[in-house]
Image (cartoon, rainbow, N blue to C red; front, side, top):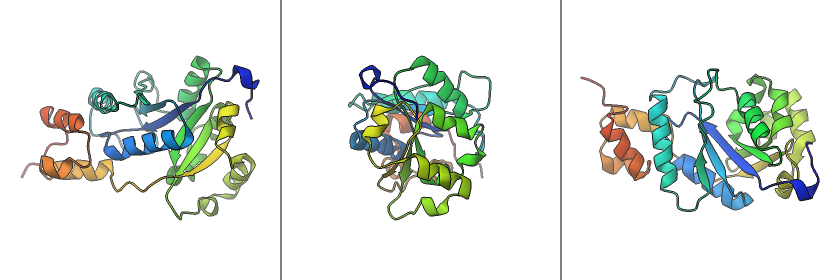
Length: 230
């Protein structure tokens, strides 16, 4: 595990990546609830430029970034921030490159990458995946009742067993290398569903529970995810 003397370690920085196409209330709730539960002072939302393991976003980079800034501005806790470093890079959105950049910028802050359990079980498909644990901790966001360990391939199961932490304080006392399983409330919201609902011509009343008001207003004013013709 990457460690420094406790007196030299700064407050942790949590990171939540995604396409945010569009950012929605589920993203924000997970980020804020995890920050509260783990006593994290800051969660940065990192929009992907060219996602490697999913389809190309429907909205332009500038629009996805603008919606993120609007969503974060509505959070008065001061916990959420936007980090656009992946949009500025002319490479696919490899997490290892993002973490290398953050580690160089914050050499004494523990980095905590927030990741859904369904994504974590496929992390061996990520570019230079073993190096990820040299750069950050992983907080695996799990739904109630899902046995993550039983879904892991043998090689990843060994990593899981060797790095699993039972105490969130270990993520604040070392810079990288631990895995914490954190159960979150299920969020019955998906960006795909929202895009489909918008394309079907849904009313603002139907969308209001799913999106921050400022984000919905931006979508309407810029005619994003417009209803399908015909």
